[in-house]
Image 1 (cartoon, rainbow, N blue to C red):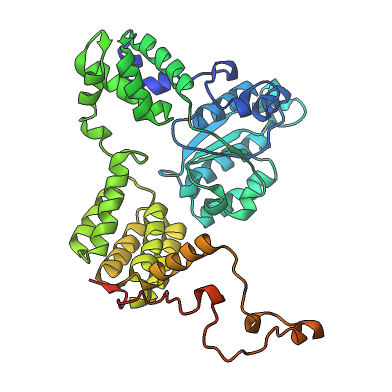
Image 2 (cartoon, rainbow, N blue to C red; image 1 turned 45 degrees about the vertical axis):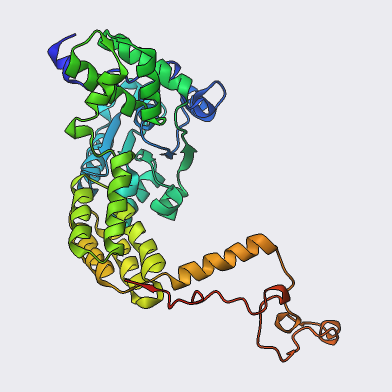
Length: 409
């Protein structure tokens, strides 16, 4: 293998070029399944691939474009913006104005819309997504968006309604083993059974994650046989330390939340900085802030929820790099605010009673009485008691928790 080829990450070197070589997602790619039929019939519509990392979203988009003879424009919403999309649109509009530039396959039956692949489409804010709309609608482009987040929340309704959503699943053990076999063959190494099991567990359905670790371990140890010990050693490599779907991701967000909970502003800002530096999705951080505002601050300072929602909105509309300032503002506010779990704890205490007792009868005085018969039966009639809970729970107190003001320092 050439030096240039060796510098290409293993996961990219192994990327299949044909649907027949693609591993996984048989519910979409198997014979007679949606993507197989779309390619076979060359009937493409804009679509969104929703699924965890490393399951083939980018690869499928490339295969779809190549198999239907269309130009492929890959963009990452992390680095690209409206300007990059505009440049592609202007080039395409220029090509349409000069039909002699098209190949025979593009002129046949009119132009063939190219594929614009937008990785991490959830990182595009509303204005950026709005910009795509007319070009998706008039067929200037076939948009294929990829996201690890629920598109119902992260893609604007107008754009989502023009796309078909395909759900991709984490790869199974057999599928990962197939990919790892291809990887070890490409690296010309043997993979011990224990190492294979370690990689499958570490990958958690993410082929790219498994291949990256296999490649790092192989290069570090220059061994012809890769062991589980080699893999554990490779995990100490600094560039593998923050994986947005891995342990460090959860450790850091946990430290961030606990620092705000302890009213430690400095620690909270530090862990925020680590997440921002690592490229963490700002909406993920802001979403946790919204939850924190009700769960941990609650009625001690009700305006915290307003601030948290405004931070989320700012991140959604502005994006990186500027929204890191909004995140810092919200973090400092949340950390310094007084804390109370009273409303949160009270709700879950009520929920526990609902789950334990089922649908108890609503007291007559609280029932709707739209007919004379219901009124005659006592519906809506005040019985003089103070309790509005079902009789079995009369006197039950949820808020604030008994013997507590619901606050904590």
